[in-house]
Length: 266
Image (cartoon, rainbow, N blue to C red; front, side, top):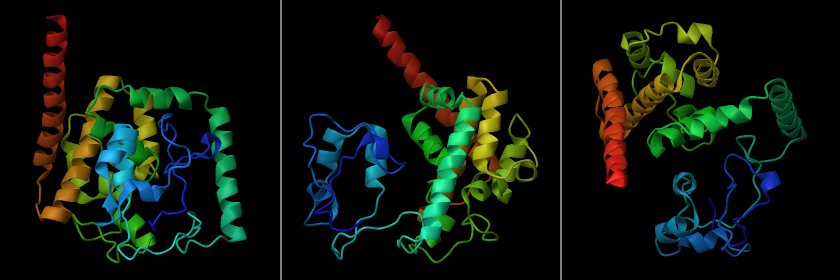
């Protein structure tokens, strides 16, 4: 992110993209600049302002965007290639992908119901947000960070064998494969039957009830959690520990929700 002095934060809803905000606070000045949300002394996001203005899932998206200490001038960047320069070829590809999505949407009228089901799952908000990022293909995997020239190491941090994509990290890495094999569903050969983690999740939603989907969501989150702990704290986990982490997360959420429900009754 550049200095943000000339970038208007709010956008027209018709232009909303996965990185743009779809529900801005109506009390906020429409001409607010990104620079007004940045602490100019430390070049970090102003947490207080962001918490005041944006809902939780949007706060996390904003705070995850890195800021440059060099304070480069604002400039226009084409999001859809690694160099940030618009090319007719990349523009055509993006337009074609949008058309493909429209065709898919017209042939599958339940996409709105699918997303509604996602947002209404009784899960911790961090798990819902994680699923949203996964389904939109915006997890900061090493492949994605290398593509953006943020990292130069692309191998999976868990096994150090293959390129870390979201599919590899969550389904195909040896750790993930053992976790899915030993969970109660006994999933095997996910990488053979599906071409992406998104395809697999869509399939799961078609064949399973919400209770099982919630458990699978916690498993996916736990795999991403231990991946981050490996990178940032050097901690390694065994498959059974990942399974336990997922189970504990859901159990603790249910206990807290049960306590809150009893308090409302009293």
